[in-house]
Length: 287
Image (tube, rainbow, N blue to C red; front, side, top):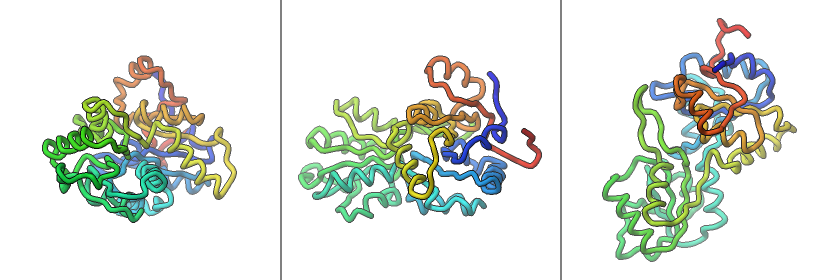
């Protein structure tokens, strides 16, 4: 399996969509040297956006997490979260009643900004839940995994209400060797138990890429041929970019381990345009 140096391919594009976890940062903080990539892109007038399935915090808070680590150039307008798409759905489809959510109080930002009545699933009384008109799954923290998930399952057995999933990721790395279940994986389990389909937002859905593309077109004209999606996961980042019709680069600094990459590409049929060890550009690298 041949890998390419990221610097040798990025200069072919006007805009780059970066996944966050596994591409720009990991459980230790920033991917070492990734700040050099951001500087290189700015110096070469290559625009960029962070496309993330992370709905645990607002775009402002997500951007602040990069700024705290030293990348001041990642501002809130550069962050496009799946939570933003979930919020748009709620804005137009859920106009009354109370919305309950699974997640942290910070993740509830996406609902609070709509002016809807909201309540955490842990505060719901199943004997008095007639006012609940929708459920939003935001984050894998902020609730009791046994008590509150069981409560959610029984609420959905009793009430025929929409369930909006703001993060389609199945899992995420917590150490070099371990992963944790993400809210997307949890939502699939609950779907199977109750036999209902949920409304899901995030990569690989093309709606997220269209949302980002429309943001670009609001300020400049760029063809899809000049956009690159950079991600560490075949079934979200690479599949999503392929479906949207833009070039893709798989990096081996996150979810996809180098020793598994070739097999996963062959077995899934999800083929990136490029494979890179990482998205790092430093002064020592050469084309």
